Length: 260
Image 1 (cartoon, rainbow, N blue to C red):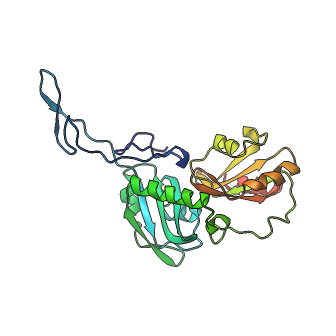
Image 2: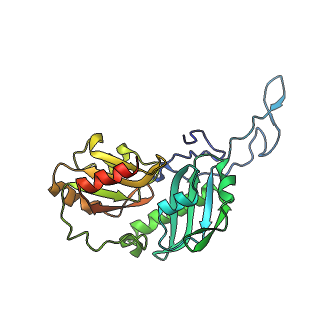
Image 3: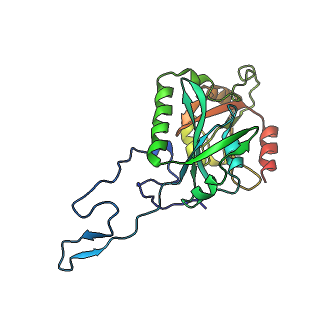
């Protein structure tokens, strides 16, 4: 179960990038200053106790990630924690080795910090506290680069490019990779809004722990539609670049059964 409450800066841990808006740091106000224990209530009762502030937005910053790192690698690194979103940071069209990870609960930030200097592959990864503003700024930069035609648009991560895509045979099934962990069937239907899809035609792949793996399979009405839908390859869903691969019913069933 993911945290559904509001955080101190007004954020919601389940927000997608399309819904994330800029936040303004809390400032002083007529009714009291930030951090004060009391605020003035213009009533005959005078000063009243101020309610405790809501918990902070649960995000950590990562540094030293392998350059072929994937969202699944980060999820495994934080094994046992609830992962809401993973954002990789690029500079000059290339992966910088830095990223952000949004967790399900504010208290999980302390557990995430315990993974500081543990390894992903052969590289140790540094884990730092972060803020919602830093995370949102990174999202804005990624989206801005994509709209500006950054070279990264054609190769978001080192492992992502498959030269056989164009020549692969289409069977009406596409595999999606790089989905936000909080993406649902409605999000995928909106991504492919130009095609006739039903919820039954969308299959989100779970890992062995029953959590989203970042992959899904979509069954189109025919091979022509799945081939045309490849035009959506590397377009964004929220803040994520979604990679598309021609697949088959056999591969889809095998992948789904492995996650059960």
